[in-house]
Structures are given as C-alpha cells and as structure tokens.
Length: 113
Image: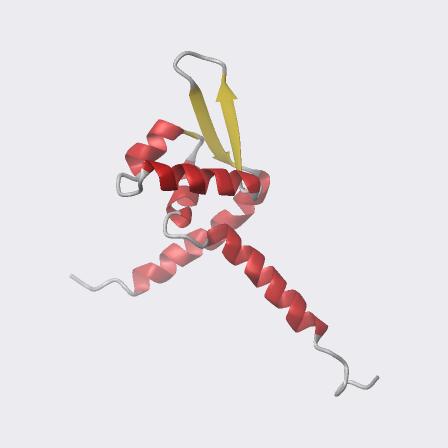
C-alpha cells in the first residue's frame, strides 16, 4: 500500500482525541466548575454559591459527569449534615493549564472600556 492509498489513521485518532477533550470541557458550566476547583477543593455548597446562575439539577449532573470522566474526585464524609467535597483529579489537573489559556484568549476579545 503506498502513501496515496493508505487510510489516514492519524486523522481518525485525532478526531477521537478531540472528541474526548470536548466531552471533558464542553457544556455551559464545565469550564467554570473546573476553574473554581482548580483553585482548591470545594464543598458542593461553595460551588452552588460561586455559580448562582446554574440550576441545582444541572450542577449535580455536571459534577457527576466530571467524576465519571475521571476529571474530578468526590469525597463524601459521614457527618450530619452530610458533607461532600470535590477536587480536580490528577487527570483534571492536566486540563487546568488549557483552561487558563482559554481564559486568556477570552481577555483578548473583551471590549475595551
């Protein structure tokens, strides 16, 4: 098989990689959640307070999805009232520099006052 007839396997691999990256960061609230957790471990109630425009249902869904993807770690404490904390996992820490770069890109498009 020569170079002209060989399937573009790298392009397919790239598409899969990009699809997985978008799965992690896409969503109206995921970037905000990840940026807030990039600073420190936070309780669920802190995240609710920091993201007042997100509904409780959506926040719970997004946190659950990010935990399932391995981006966040969730720790539940056996206390009354219940306490739950979230933090970036090691894999999630790898996402943080890219998110900070996205934030910098946004600064370039902000209107000057």
